[in-house]
Length: 272
Length: 272
DNA sequence: CAGTGGTCTAGACCACGTA
DNA sequence: ACGTGGTCTAGACCACTGT
Image (tube, rainbow over all chains, first blue to last red):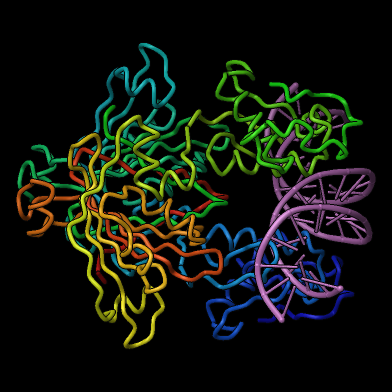
């Protein structure tokens, strides 16, 4: 662990001294501290027991205030890397590698992060009036239209997932214009100023329908792992409502949660 | 929204004045503020547009510092209730009802929260040397033993899930002593000072084996929704490694994540 | 340009664990 | 009794959004 430690005089003046350090915290101090601590943890510093220094000690080491250290530690906490308890030093919990948000939202980025080649084969793309459920999810008015896209997604040529995405007009218009061989729609949309910042995911099992079976080459009625996702932009406006159906054995979803951070929940599967 | 607003003089002196207010924030100020704001949001205050007051305004209303308000808002943010963007007021994102951590970890509490009667039928409970995977997960040494429990869980009498839990000796000794009709092991363990504070979950599909089929009454080889979970106590010591297999159509798992809070990830299903 | 949330500081007191 | 993290305050400046 380092980050040119000590040197309490290096307060704020020389911020971003080595402008080369791209990605190393992208600006805010606490991110830099968090990144450094994350590396120290995964590297295995802090010894076998994995006891971190006290907040005050870290503050002095990095030449920042305790508040900033706490902000950094909160990041690691929510990633499930360290514990936190009143009265005791923090302890290393695990070395979990948490993907970035974009890696999770974009099949393409996910594929690359595993060293696989992502592919997308467009099955259909239609524009039609939104039904009740779609209006509800995308916050549309009666009579508004939606774009519905169905794509087969592949990893290095192997069929893995069927993607059924419903876009509101503003977004759908852009996607509909794309050549069918564009793999990452997410990237294109980002270039058009459509940002994905928040998502709600629901994961369950569903039986393959005729289209699923045809595209994935599985048995009709066979089990698929379904991830439904509603994504919104920074203003809270829905930009996508998607249903991804994975062949068994191709993916697993992971979550970390704790008494402090609880974003996961379990539901009865009644309503759709 | 209220919380006896105004009254800037009520700084810290009368804290916990009405000790009756159980659960209404359980002590810390920011939890009280968060609880109040959460209610205001779900009640539908803040109008149709759902724009929250500025942080400074809220601070004045509640008679607390801006820092405390921000702490409260961070809770709502991570629950996916509100957005947050520099330059703009916060906006209501959704009315998601997020279960408490204990509701997620305990089948019993989950059942009650849905108004169903939880049940547990013990299938087997054995003590034996831990294999390599179990030692890895529970951080045990070669030669250490584990307790392995298999239970059928029911909701109002209907089979729903098979629970396969591996306990380290310290915990297993307690569970093994319990009468077979004890429904909530989590509750009992809590009374014995075994605390569950952090968990890592992995969700995927698995085929039912002979035991699963016998207990759940499904076809052998039929699809089940599997949730694997490793739970640790506040010191980071593993206390449970469990594998729950649900009949299709009985549950779904939900997560909210955002650019800020990303605890969910997607994995290739290679290594077990 | 004014308003808003994001970041950071410096200091204070408290509740909890541990020795 | 002491060290540790949890909470809270008061004030400061900056980066961004909107008008």
